[in-house]
Image (cartoon, rainbow, N blue to C red):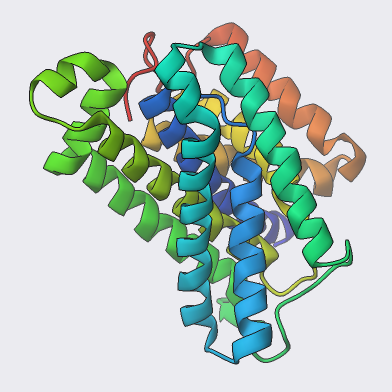
Length: 293
């Protein structure tokens, strides 16, 4: 029974990691940017939802939608302020990484000032906090919500990228921007759209992570490490791989904390990342050129 409970807990946690990893992977596959500010989008999604709930009294689902949109807009702002000038000058990966670190620190400080660096939480009675019985096991409503959101959103993102003209255009820009432009595609519009999509998905992960617990301006930092590990395991730029990697990380973390020690869960998780990199440097479903989405 304990094993089944921990497996369910791991899948629920992994669903949040999977959402974050998908957002992370969209940026890398379309812009070739290792964006270390990605975790901040998760924090902004949760914080905007918190402020809307606290100030306006709107229902949770509406506040969450505003949080998701807000996180997407923050991602577009970061892209246009930090990354677009670098793209115009032809600066490569290292410059973008340094720029993303700068945006990460700056945006985190804004939230630190706005909250006076104190923990906050969704007001009582707003976010789902009850339990649902699945057979003999009780599961938190927030956990069920995380799994449902992950399945729906990741499926929608995969459909968008692989079954629509917009998705084809985004992937074409990620593959070769100049060739895409020759065919009439606007690279700038596709990059802004990809940034918005990435930020929105990551913001949703942050809202689900915040759930019914208190959180602060560092919320996205832990997600950044786990999400990056999920992307590496699953394969850079592959939505399916990122989702599988996130679930894998969540289950491994939960089981190692339960059956070995919580002190070793990060060591075990990142040790497995190293093993995967040695076995398959491109990840489980990644391609050698890192161009798929």
